[in-house]
Image (cartoon, rainbow, N blue to C red; front, side, top):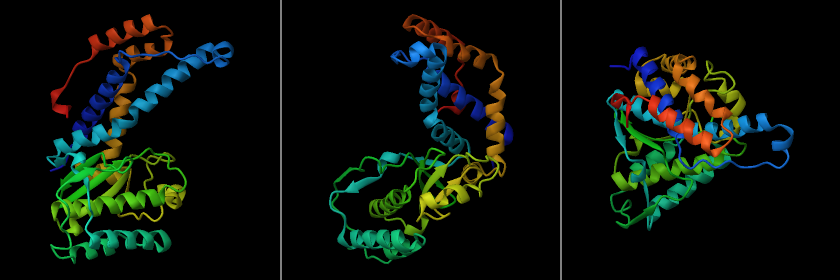
Amino acid sequence: MSVSEDVIIACTRYVLSKSLHDYLTKSNWHITNHIILDRLYPEERNITSRMCGLQTSLGTFWEKLAKVLLKINHCVLIDPKSIKEPILMPKAVEDLKQAIMNKREQNGGSLNDLRQGLDNLTSNDLKANTKSYKIPKGKGADLIFKKGGKTYICDTKTVQVNANNGNTFNETAIIWLCYYKVKTGLPASVICPCFVFPYNSSNELDDSGWWSEFGDRVKPLTKQEVFVGNEFWSLITDNPKALSSIIKGIDSLRDSDEIKVYREFFACDTKSKLISFSNKVKRNFVRNDDFEI
């Protein structure tokens, strides 16, 4: 089974619409002042302020969309908070974790050495204190799911990659793999830590081209730990043209009456106007439980 183009389009349209709705109906609007730009470019400053807030709010759109598509494709979703750090990491695991982390930072390579090393440990080697902490800040996953006999532990990232992020990503991937192995006892060969870049910001139709621009920034990660664009969307939907369908879903909303209403947001320059606009958006939104998580 795969998720059809029509369903992907409808799902994308709804999740995007709901993301916009949820932001535009916030009740805690706060209008900030800029002593220079409010005097020189008042209209442009207002639009920029609104657009920046909206752009930030859409940071979770791709994660929400992925969860809905996974549900539609009957994949098992696991609470990302289930990954926890043991109070005392088993020494054999800790030693292996540090050795592989250092090796990858210096010489690259895949995570298969770590997987093999973890699977070669005895049950006594893997024993940890039954208590655990919340995973360290900045090291958490936002999506865990089972598909095709594998467990994927993912973080959906912004499409622009900062320089020198690679070692941080490397440490996170290794931590996830070790923690999940200790927690579940699953074969490490079926645990897949990965980072998702929802599309190639240079060319949304060229997933492989992402590596020529950003590959150096994510080293020592390999293509086993990075999904770009349709590599991810086709994986979770079993539809080889999933990203194209997602783009069609976004385009389908562009000229809708709903978006025409939402555009009024950029003209709101007082608290009272924002409240009035928010109430109008609430009245115009139609919920679809088929696409809710």
